[in-house]
Image (cartoon, rainbow, N blue to C red):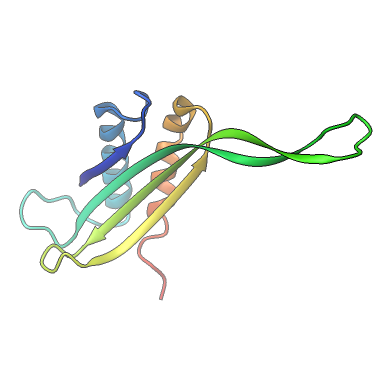
Length: 129
């Protein structure tokens, strides 16, 4: 399992400990699905990336207490996206991709949700035909 990219300015997310947590939870979830970890030649290459972009969301707020006019106010948020890829090691062709997203302003709270994000994403593997 390779951590290809962790994009965040927060130490709560962009750290070796976070990478290890994701790898550990990903290994557990894949073994529970019947896959076997190997140190030799593998049937699948598994990699992940985690992105946390500070952004803004438009939220409608009332301007007057009587509810006369409404306007859009930009509210900062943190959106965390975890992408898990499985590829054929011979052809390097993507076999499966799972994506989990969380809208969270606080990077520490987002970090606490990573285990669930991995579990929910791997639960969708293998794809149903």
